[in-house]
Length: 96
Image (cartoon, rainbow, N blue to C red; front, side, top):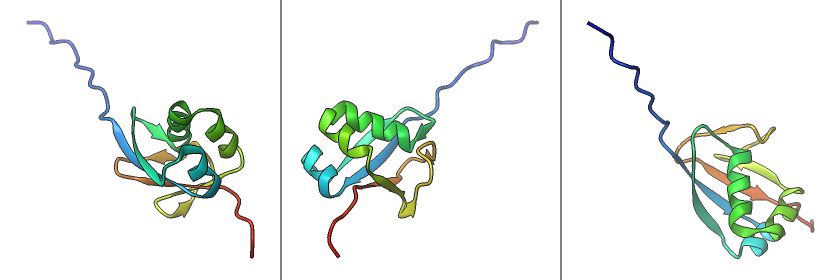
């Protein structure tokens, strides 16, 4: 009797909420949006999908942004994101 072939299953998509502040909000014209990403997903992946949706204006802003993942500072855009995560996009703020 032969062994049945192995079944390859794709990872479930990852849904994240991206919240935009200041110049990022102006570039997207949104306070926040939900993105569905292929797994495994990272902060960089979420940023790339957002740029695909919103274009050059957002791409320009993102080069100056810092990010929070579930309210914790991101120290590398290769940071993995899990389903239900919240990513905050924080451009530099002026004032004092």
